[in-house]
Structures are given as structure tokens and as C-alpha cells.
Amino acid sequence: MACFVVRVLPALTSMILLGGLTKAAFPADHPPATANCHSCHADKTSGASVHSAMEAPCTTCHLALTENAKTIFVLAMPKEQICFACHEKTTIVQQHIPQVDKSQSCVGCHDSHSSQHRMLLSAKADAEYQSTQAKTSRHMKTARGPAAVNP
View 1 (cartoon, helix red, strand yellow):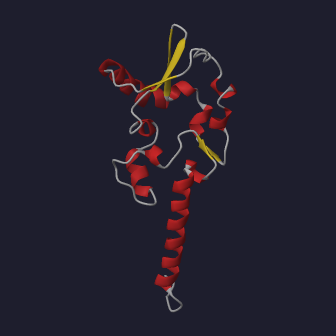
View 2 (cartoon, one colour; view 1 turned 60 degrees about the vertical axis):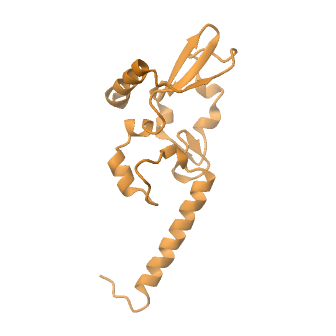
View 3 (cartoon, one colour; view 1 turned 30 degrees about the vertical axis):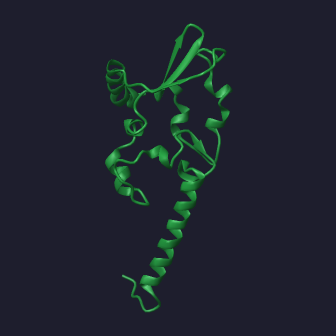
């Protein structure tokens, strides 16, 4: 919760004031914002890897706005920035394998809720990761060779 108050809340306030929220509307029969999201969205909380944020209330990352009989959900921040409300950007970018451009969005490769693959990766990103790991492993064996001296 401290993460939300320190990093998300100020950005959220700015986004509301600037009108920069991205809306995703749901049918009028969608349960009210106070309902248990997991009762209908169980797929978001299961898989080979589940984001630890799934233990927090959905409102940590999402805003639920109800008007008349319609519930609208919006991200608390732009998708390019929301991961960094809790995760330190410089550390992630430096340690990321394969290397990524600082402008890339995390959700291009990672699911923000859960995945059937390691590290919340999409199927395509997981295949690319495995390929990168295999190439790195082959390169290390070739670089050392049988005559390599261990440090």
C-alpha cells in the first residue's frame, strides 16, 4: 500500500487533472466496483507465474468508475509507466535479458497479471527468451573451449 501512496497516487492525481486516463468500458451488467474481481477474473490470478501485485487490491493499478449502471475501468497511470510505480526502472533495464530499449513498454513482453510462462512472459516472449538463453549457453561453451583456464 505504501508503494501506491508514494508513487501511484501523485501520478494518478496528475492524470485525472490532465484528463489522460485510458478507458475500457464494460457492459452495464458488470458488477459494481466494490465486487470481488477475482470471482469472475480467476484467470488473472492463476498460471505458472502470477504477479505478486495480484495479492493487492485491483485498485492498486486500476480505477473503477461507476456512472449510472456502467462500470468503467482505467489504468491509474499510462501503461508505459505503471510498472515503474513499484519497480525501479534503472535496475530493471540494466538487468534485463535480452537488452531492451528504455522506451519499450513492459507489457509488450510481460503480462501484468499472470502467465503460463516464466517471469510473466507471453508465449512469444518466452520462446525468444529460451532462444537467447540457448545461444548464450552455446557461446559460453565455445568461448571457453576445452583449453580454457578457469579463473
